[in-house]
Length: 414
Image (cartoon, rainbow, N blue to C red; front, side, top):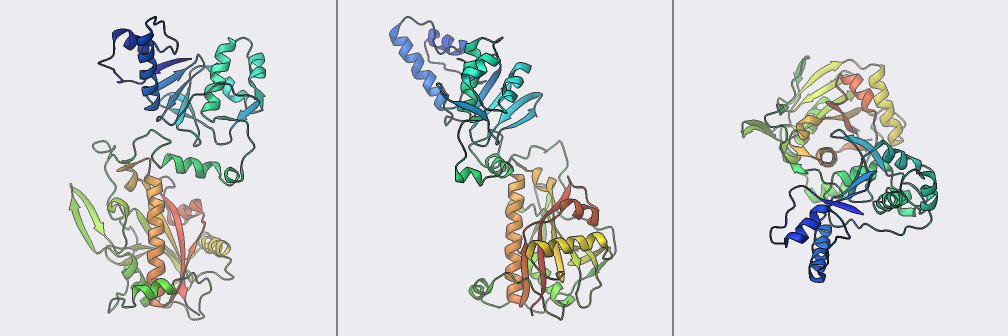
């Protein structure tokens, strides 16, 4: 099987014959000197363990991300395409990858794509050789072995563990962590000088009004708050008041201060946020709140204000109905909070892990809402699912710029 050293891999102290053999990419080089041949295989194993080789056939090229990938041969039985295999375009090339293996396959020819897609049905190596009889059998075998080694082809019935993984969950898990992907990960700031960052605070174009502020800080012991915290789905007959709503948002989500760092504006809030990006916007669908009309609102944490988006309408009621179904609640919640994520606020700085970070921030905000509501004697409940397209319709946002990432119900206790 042919291989190629990845770009910028050099061995400055190797004998010229070994260096030349590594550059030529042949696992069976024409080296007659036994000592030099042994040294060649030593260096070959070294670059394999460091994931510095590209494996090649006339149909595909396989790029391992690290030394965990092992190229094997001798696969017996029938194989088919793994349900976790993904085919997509990257930098003008067609690539195949899977979260099951630290490697990516580049399709080099239309025949390579044909070979890949032929394994939608189970096929043995012998059957593949017959089906692709117009290709050299060695090329078919090597391509088959690489795709099996990369776990793009599989022969096994899934274990109970694998059965419980959905494609998108496992792919997202692998792509947002170190190990099974080779994209830069973390705060790369790849858009500095290319695109402007989004502002720390979103502006409001509608009418605003101030929310009440608490007269004193919460004083319930934190241990007691944690012990009492629970999801309460049923709300009291008398609804939550605007005074309680104002105090709740003040304690849980207000902007405590605004500051500049590296010519960029940041905020400090009661809950932590990754990189202090604070991309989550808090929206409210109010069904019942004493002192506040039914309607759709946007919370402005900088001024501790509500901005009126619209009266309660049929689409907003669908959001209420969705939260009711998701939690098994019998009636609409008094207040439904919907968290909208301004994606570019995080993606401008972070790479590979941006969406994963937003989900973590959502969980943090959930917990903060739970603890503050518990300390205030209110009824909190996180919601497991929501309709992001419907959110965009109700609040007038662009799905790719800002759409919903979490929901939370709040009301008075019985």
